[in-house]
Length: 320
Image (tube, helix red, strand yellow):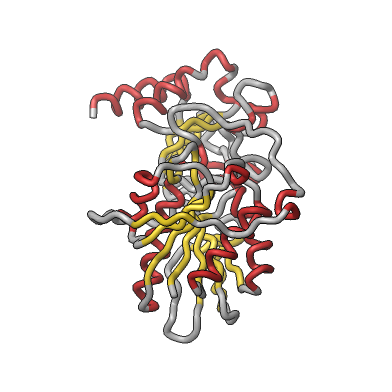
């Protein structure tokens, strides 16, 4: 028996969020007196998959069927279910993501499992199996007792800080039976965001709104982001105006993020925007309007003109 962790890959590399999931799953394995096994789906080198051992996995099952190179929630659910059955896993862990959302309900149905999403802490095993989840876009918490024989835990990104060890995992080929019905939905193409740091995986994010007055001024935002090694983001009106690409839009109808630091420049803080960013560990707001709603949600606030504050802040970061 083992705790099974689904590893999500990006161009053959283990995603940061999956590193967090591996570490979480390994800790659950310690608590339950078993081992941690990862299941990776798609194209990747064994040397990369073996690095899962640094986060506590002892073994990686690799399903490398070429039909699985494109992320397909239906087919991936079949693969992970087969791995769970082979390993006798009663706990399945994965990082919450768009791909995970597409497969977890199917996976729960296949395994007749209980499912908890947005999990932010290790389970409490003192009286059953209870996990704490973030709900209402981070405004509240729920404690879920999972009574099913198999439990699926979707871990909220950037809430678990993995600790690395000097170890490697063994990598075994895994070839579950796949049917045509697993591919009735197919991925025709994938358009990926580009940039040095991708927004969904970022620890630090510098974001801006219409207070920047136009796309020609975005260099100030990018300069600070580069100095901090941060990703860039924007509010919905900015993407609607085509000042920035849609994949940078964070908010209720955009990407929901939970970085360690979120810096909002010239964003008023409408509730729709807050819904996508209020899980950030620290929020810094820069706005010349002292009555901007965003200040009520900020950990730190700077009342000032972004065109004056940003260059000074960037210079200070570079000096450090």
